[in-house]
Length: 144
Ligand code: HEC
Image (cartoon, rainbow, N blue to C red; front, side, top):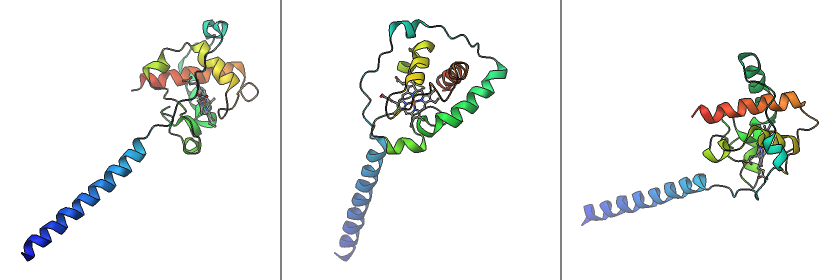
């Protein structure tokens, strides 16, 4: 009888513990809602990237990304930067297939314009720097 009681409390304890764990896990897994659709103008989508990715500008692209984008978009572009916690919509996933379908021109336009809470980089970065950072962003999807 005594043993039985002990077993029951152990079982109950395990049950409570696993429920807690499940809760914690689901809180982490909860995805933030995506922002409203954000289509770029046709002309922007068709604009070709004038900066060819090479060894020399790859390092610059990475550096620009670390300085200006990583805090929200995360080191690997997964949208899990330290600032992302405080943003109530998703910063997107730069490694997703959906993201990969966008043209360089489209990514360039979005980076140039921004949309709250994403800042505009029109003034902060030169055209050349924005194309260079887009080249780096592209490598994140391929690194998977
Ligand atoms: C303060 C946080 C923040 C910073 C810094 C930031 N972004 Fe964003 N970015 C966001 C958020 C949030 C979104 C989603 C916006 C929306 O859906 O309205 C976004 C969206 C984007 C998109 C569009 C993604 C899509 O799926 O349409 C691109 C491209 C992008 N960011 C590139 C960059 C680049 C490149 C940098 C650095 C030069 C940068 N961002 C810096 C927060 C940020």
